[in-house]
Image 1 (cartoon, rainbow, N blue to C red):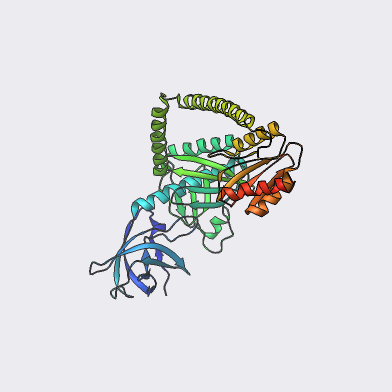
Image 2 (cartoon, rainbow, N blue to C red):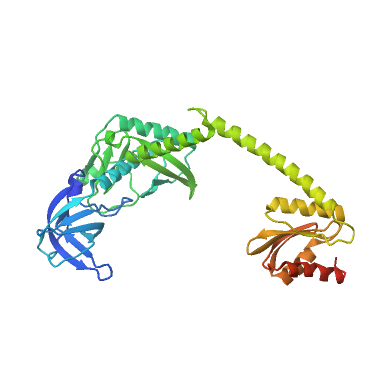
Length: 400
């Protein structure tokens, strides 16, 4: 079978083509199939760039939706949602790509080339991973890039965009290729397609790109994280950068309304409210501690210091149990709802709570542990009478 001619390499802005079907293979699982063409405008998935999507229209007007495209041994296969009898080898077909989808990928891909090239110039960092996702574009560098270095690279990348420089894609002759210094993730045999952006990058690439850097609009770093000894950078270019900025403005408007803050005052307003909340929490903890001390004081000599209290946080559970222990100098337990049964805290001022916790875990299907003076965990037993009975048995046995 002849190889598929790649019209997208000649003109990435071409959206339609008239082609001939070379082969058609049905897919019984999906009810669709795949079609190989003699030439296509559809870019097949590869090099970190997703495949194009769009339609193939048969002479009788039947429209087949293309959801995926792959290249195998130089033949480009188009995954379609149906495969009627008319979609047979030798039949003519009209292809049309989803241009919005394609142009978005072109903006991301060229933007990534610019930033990767500049990071290589500034830091000697290699691009060791690249992926255009549905939500974000990521590129991985071989070296860690400090935040200030990434900010400087972003600024320089946008200067390249504003200069509206030409983006050149070509297959240099072997003797010319031998003289070029270009980026490549792997050794390539045969003809090599080189994408050049003056002053920014020269890289081996099979993807689709804009004609001029100004068509990218903007390159914005959305985030960065340490990754495998280097840095993983989240990137938004062109329309994605605009969408991200619009979403941020919308979120800021909602927050400004919530905090009654003007432009430029949102961070201060949020910090002010955080400080107020922290003060309120501290005051609530003080009041809660007073309640715990009062509760502990109500325990009379001879009473079994085992309490069941609703809706206690882990910290509150611990503090109430310690308050009981300090007052009674006996093994104390506090339970509250948690998990599949009850969360607990055991305290024993002068004893070893671990021994009691181990016995209780065995008797009440629990788990947990801690230090001699304090243990915590949970029990699956939900019958409060059985929980109370355990402590009565321990007391009768002289264990507490």
